[in-house]
Image (cartoon, rainbow, N blue to C red; front, side, top):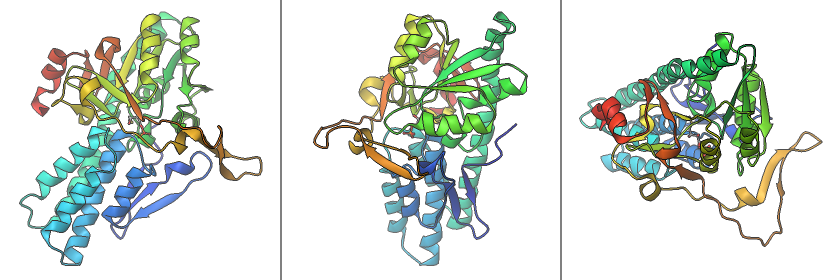
Length: 361
Ligand code: MRU
């Protein structure tokens, strides 16, 4: 039951298309990216989002820059500018910088910029699919073990934001073990945090789980602690935008509070991530991970479908109220039970992370 669709794909004329996720779940809108600037805007404006998909879009953005550079006979500074602009699109997800580095290395001594950029972007996308599948393979035993301990009962998993296929290319990180558990016949149910301010949980995770026929319940962001106190959550799995070498985890704002509640209730709190989301250069997440701050209007307004079926944005506070909009928070590794990666389960500490991923440092 792999995904029936991908989130980014090449067109016959070798441009790139993505789903405009700002319209989901209400409308299916596809956007064609022709230039690196369009790819950069798509990341910045959250047409695409989620760490692995940001990386994949940046890689294709560099391909689009290479194509324009050769077609218009532009000089090398055009490519430098493309790398620079793309790197400014969003600050927290390290996959962006990982993908740009990889493209830069590939193109360094390239004799055929366009073909090489195309090949590398395609490779990044294909690898992400396999990586996410493997995260599912390694995460599945966690769900199986819980299911075996409560025969005939549902396994209840809580997640925050969207770390599904819409944040990746296919499968997703958090959703991969869930989809694979369902394939195995395990009765899984997911509590989906709505994830204000942009509601990625309500809009995107609920949409994906609906498409995959996974029972799920949408909850307000503040409900998780209550559910955990009442034994309604067996396992928390979240995604991440950057995880340090000591296992500190940056993820969508609100993740930290879920980790605290899980810790207080002795509920396992796992983070599903591809190794491309590890930042082995940094150790202390709180001081070293750049946290994106977005427009306050994302907090002041809520977007939804009105009773006439039209998508609209409504103000939920006095016009003059000031809001602050930090996109991510950092969960210290002491609150994390484990990391689910494509190479296996990893303890959230420096020794374990470097043993498993030291070759990537
Ligand atoms: O602001 P977003 O929607 O890009 O934030 C996404 C998340 O926080 C995800 O959990 C993370 O990128 C992992 S996606 C597999």
